[in-house]
Image (tube, rainbow, N blue to C red):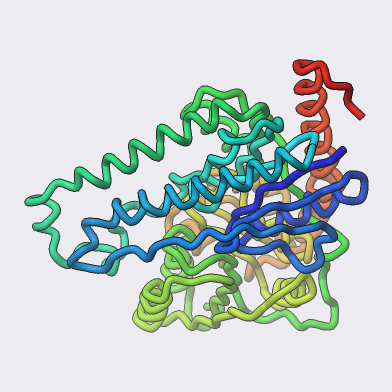
Length: 407
């Protein structure tokens, strides 16, 4: 089977999961990846061909012209549309059996599906509502809030309606819709009325493992971009509630950052007496395995995460994991079996962290069951096999409808 992949995800958990999936599929099928030059390229170790198409975006305006950002966004959407139309024509000329499209890092639903004649599979691994509450950060709040009251943001509302209409059209044009968690499948159905099939992602379990030579430290690790959506501040607030003689350091590993978010987290840590260590240059499976092996435990607090990769990586490295009880994180961790789930509350999270730091029997049981869960349910081979079935079924269905014999 010949499979084209449209990739426009930023570097992160979903990006890694997508790279791993089509790398695994390349062992049995011919895979070619198409992406935008402004996006993240595929991983170096991915054994597939990669073709990049240019798409230069305009910069958004700063105050006092920020009220015109809807115009800049719309201009960027037109540039994106033009690039995707060209890319779609190139894919259709390639005589592929099916096109695999994970979530778009720009528009969520990949709008390219509306311009493709080749049958498409959309794999939803993130949603636009995966955001922190508006104005939850002081630096996000308008310096001149009265402008909002005096000048209604009609342009922005028009742009959002236009983008929503395009997403809906694209969703209706997709042949098969998949979700990386049951949570996302339900949300897709609620918003678009489309049946969404469950297709989990997995881990290359042999690449994530405990490094016995690495000594455990009194450190809680949080993995994710420095953005409000990852809610690293909740962990800082929780650690401040733990007695100083027991209080661990907070390690934050990230590949991208909002500078003002880092400033905010640093100031919050200093004010509450929580020491933060920044890890911004950890790369590859070996680097992350070493970091997980150093941590006493891992905490995931992302807001309404589509799935949550960090707890799975931690469990694979025999490091206990705690996550908030919401979104797809409820599916990666079985509370009390291979990890702990808590409410989005500093007190509840502090109690869970303290229990893992002091209860060695609980910690050892979660470590043992966590590694077992990853090996049993979250392997890359298992995830690739399920995805392969969906791709083949979509190609067969399209071939039957057109009368083309499937090779």
